[in-house]
Image (cartoon, rainbow, N blue to C red; front, side):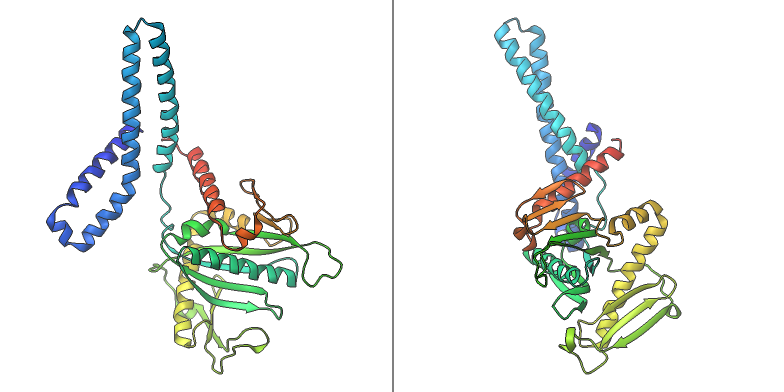
Length: 356
């Protein structure tokens, strides 16, 4: 492992020199590429420097220990050597994480889908809560949120919604949200004060801007209809909404956020390409496909990745046994701490599967 990070350190220094060359500075594309690589290697370079410094200190202390006769100084050297070993152990884990393969999708935009599950109208209302939570989190990152389609209920709930979140690194944060979300609370429509349990399912897909997916026009069924909210609100007088069905796979996408049918069709096709890309990737990797299906589940109450308990103001993520009693903050989009813990858990899982 030390040889590998030494090689990457040397590469980092080469890039650093190359970025100072006038011909590179004049070439904007090349300079941008080098900047990206430089930023990716910088944490590894720093880790190598820290590792080398501590290792040298420990080796010097061990050498001094061989000739030192004073008991007090020997004790001091031994103590320092033990501290160095602990620091090296921590750095070992840190470097392993830095060397983990990067997810190529992490920097991409996101297509996020929310569907109400078990629980009737209360499940739809919870779907609306999740839509608001994700929108607020995205806005806190200065990412753009677009509602591509939404099937609203009379009470303002969401039976089904699809949004696009655009911003660098969006997928790296939202990818942990796929699965069944369970809510426990007293519904506004419940007069007896009983706590109900409802669910909503969330699916998260990276949006690939240029997806190499061959789509035959004969495989598409394209329907147009008038868009609008619950109870006929904001109904257009023209058939501007578009729904596209990919017949061989049964994948359906819809878009109604634009007044122009052409723009809605373009957006729907872009989403379809991302969905088909994801679909074919799953066919290639059957294990991945099974894991994803298991994550999303059926929307049954017994299946869940996370529980939102209103009476206790508690949020629990069951995948990593994470619990917080500040539910309101989460519902207002404060997801950073939870996502950070999910990321750490993912890294640990990856480390267990590889040998460096």
